[in-house]
Image (cartoon, rainbow, N blue to C red; front, side):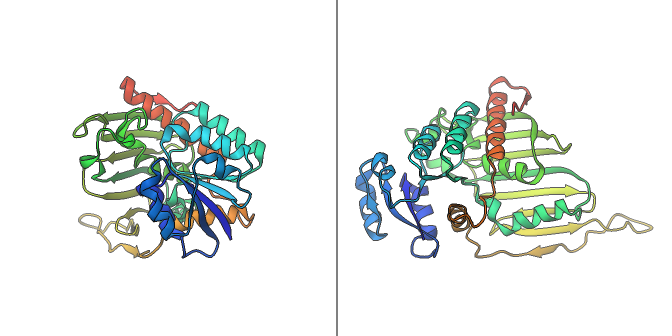
Amino acid sequence: MINAAIVGLGRWGRTLVNSVQGKSSVIRFTAAHTGTRASAEAFCAENGIALKDDLDQILADAAIDGVVFATPHSQHGGQVERTAAAGKHVFMEKPFTLDLKSAEAAIEAVARAGVVLAVAYPRRFHPAMIELKARIDDGRLGTVSHCESAQASPAGITMSPDYWRSDPQEAPAGAMTATGVHNLDALIYLFGKIDEAYCTSLRRVMARLEDTTTVLLSLASGISATLYCSLVTAPTYRFAVYGTRGSVELATPELEFRFTPVTERPATGRHPAPAPEIIDYKGFNALAAELEGFAAAINRERPYPITAEEVLHGVAAFEAIVRSAAVHRPVKVSQ
């Protein structure tokens, strides 16, 4: 059993704890630190978690194997470096860092310490995304030409302007840090490196933050991709890939997998629209899967499925998107 600490016990930190606490046979949370101690005391007591005064107490505790961070984005790089230097394994919420320089320093610290680094992209663990990758890799989709994704939530409609997630310094390119980076990582997982980004990011509703972000991407593999993310509309998730032998759509609820094949055109009339193949993955807990994947990597059972090179490339692509939004033109990815 891996003993983990959670740093940051806001809404998302508690969601991570609740995904495994008392349910997993491989990982549990035994300690926590948060900047809002008073609001977390009851939650920690209910879950058998010792609430610590600061990160130093967690890093000095020999009984803690790894630290899970759900903290403001600008703090991530330094937290990774400190945790690795203390010999603790690191699970960091997305985005890994906000710039390539801090990401490189954090990755170097992890390599020096020889600890496990996990970055929280739970869709890497989802069987629908794994099935999609298998069909791309074995040619069942034919030659892929394009991928489009959309992810949205209404969180920004009622978000306080003083909340750290509303701060443009913590969330450059607006909705990218909240939702868009998930699909950016999915593109890297499925198709490899991103070559160029052209981003438009708009402030439609929120007082300070650009809440509606759209990105056109070109990939080194030759395909194009579009990425839409928003904080001011109904909860939405859609990820679609188009190939010469068929198209796949992953969509909420529960990331249903829908494959529509290309069929032969009849002698007269249009191509028919065949019934799609549908695979339903109801009940799969991707958050538990990523935390248990972290535990498996610590126990050397299998590597965490996001490499350091992919983490760095994801940050470089994110940095290009942020730059493109600022200069209103396409920007090449630097790494």
